[in-house]
Length: 200
Length: 277
Image (cartoon, rainbow over all chains, first blue to last red; front, side, top):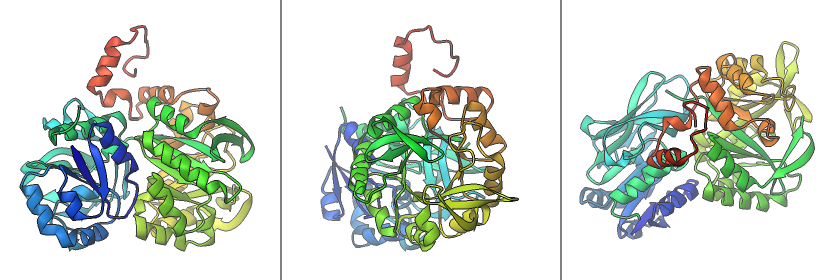
């Protein structure tokens, strides 16, 4: 098993790569969609701005959507989760459009949301063995799926409830950072690797 | 519910962790990679490396330390000290830092915050402010708290936020290393005025001081260093006390993985610390 870790050119992919490798999947960091879509699974990491990521996605948007709709296992983290939707208030540019809906700025007093927050999880296998869950967030935007049945976990920030995780087929998106959420986060990564068909 | 954070700070000089009192008299306390991993295991919510190396040559050493730390650390890592321009930020992030803290260079050139936030996102730019009591307010200092500026801490914090800083790391020079408690008035003044998370720093002597910073100082996080490095307490004990006082910090019990259960089942049952293992 080999997962593509897509590099939009923004920041730290180190811990995520190590977390995935620790869960038993080889990781190829790439900025080339042809390479990324040819591997066994796709990880869209969580560092950077929507606009830049959208520009990186633009030439391959339809191919990425078709691959994910066709069953290529995917994990989108934070910005990577937001990228699974149609678009974002953060900037112009389209997302993958696998999930219908938009990304909105958090209407809270203190933004970004920064720190560990409770995650109210469903029985999705992504969360097997990690209930209850407290995970690390660093976000100013949240997703608003049109189809709320895609939401598999919720969190609350300053009284605002928002989707902590979504799922569409073999694609999962998490708003928190599993690679920064210590042992619990590593377990979520390991669960995803197993769901993607890899792992030990 | 967002949890109040306990952040462990390691001052790093030429690749080693050092600790001084009031920015003076540094002594060696260990290997940063090893200490960071140990503090994560003990329950630290984040780790901060402040590079206090005097020379520019130590930069390569720091990047190497960050790279090696990021390979084993699974909580956020902030790196600060010696960030002079927006060009210094990218290499640290690529080496494995999640956030970069800026201090003296941002005072000299506030555009550093604007550019850094625009390029890498607000969530990874931390404005570090060293302040000391000055009449009714607080004056900002730079260069390891040696150079006074004309900036007032509250208004400078507000400007940092407007320019895109995602967090304020607020150190009281008066309290740093003194272990008499955080400067609650300073912390509260900034936390109430600026709508980004404020990390209280300088003065932690025990769990009560952390509680006061959260409850009375309105801090989102507390920075702890010396009392941990000296072995006076542990992150686990601090959080255990905070939990008992109703401060909802993250503890092992919040996320119980199957591995934890197995460990607990196999562990010596002579533990009398109650719900927090």
